[in-house]
Amino acid sequence: MADYAEKYDLTSNSLGPMVSVISDGLGSFSLEHLAAHPEYIERWLNRLQTERKWSENSWDRYYELLHSLFNRAIAGSG
Image 1 (cartoon, rainbow, N blue to C red):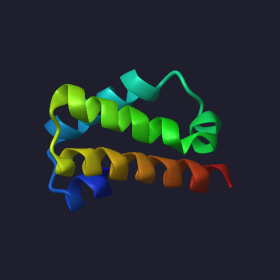
Image 2: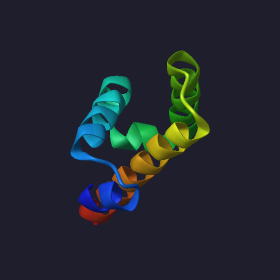
Image 3: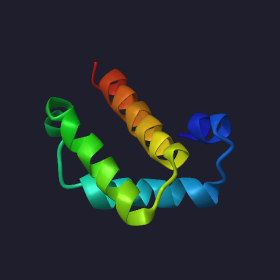
Image 4: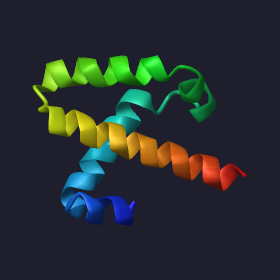
């Protein structure tokens, strides 16, 4: 994730909380389940955007972080 942090100029202080939000919201689901139900992720992100009053940029950052995590998981399983 260091490359993601560098790409988006995130500090270690911001990346940890982002991962915590993802873990709290999606951590009970397997990657297989989430991959089979991508609409769940978008609904979850939309709900959090409303609850936390996220900007579009924040929504995009979470989406991109999840995308990166999925790509790494896929690459690691092959």
